[in-house]
Length: 247
Ligand code: PEP
Image (cartoon, rainbow, N blue to C red; front, side, top):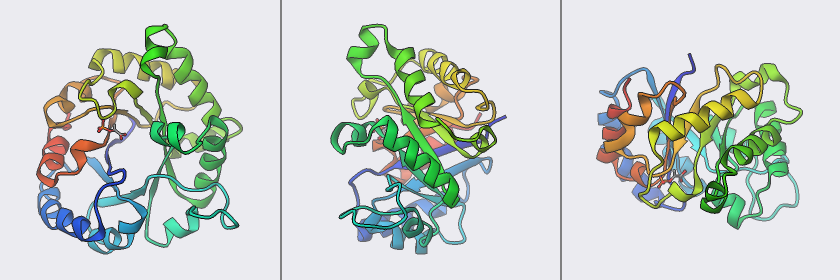
């Protein structure tokens, strides 16, 4: 069975000071949450140092929201895998739809980044998903299959145990219109089966997941957790979501 992960993607939210306040409230709650669920928080780069100092020695693991595929070089504004590792970062989200839409992330750069992340010992959380137009045109499966195959092109099959996938229908992100859990599970099955070696890979659902609907996703056999945006910002709400993700 793949392990269960709930990962909070803070996007461009929270200063270092606000990050400290989040952990003041969240860490006492985290200790009482179901131990089998891995809890990951992905703050902005500027809050990583503070987040690392607060989560050190706790069950909360740190993730970053993106990284460059090169280890160093003339890439103004970018951050590399070794820079993340210095803060004890374990996970990195790659190919989030917002980065694909606004920051020139492509299937090809996601593939390069997956390769670098794995070589450097980071666990990539690879996000795939369709737009509303693609869904309405009946292209959902083709889209996620193409993104998944491209992300892992040339990656040794034995490394696929070390990756995490997230199915995030773009029309469900930040809209409050979450995907029907049965449909999400169907697409996640398509994703799992389109590349050999993903049997034990955790696949997370992302798209307006919150405490009230987390349980309905987690009941489905191919859902191994959540990638959570808005509902990960409030410590009590995020703790309630993790609690409700218990299967
Ligand atoms: C996300 O940013 O990956 C996400 C799923 O956001 P939200 O939970 O706010 O829809």
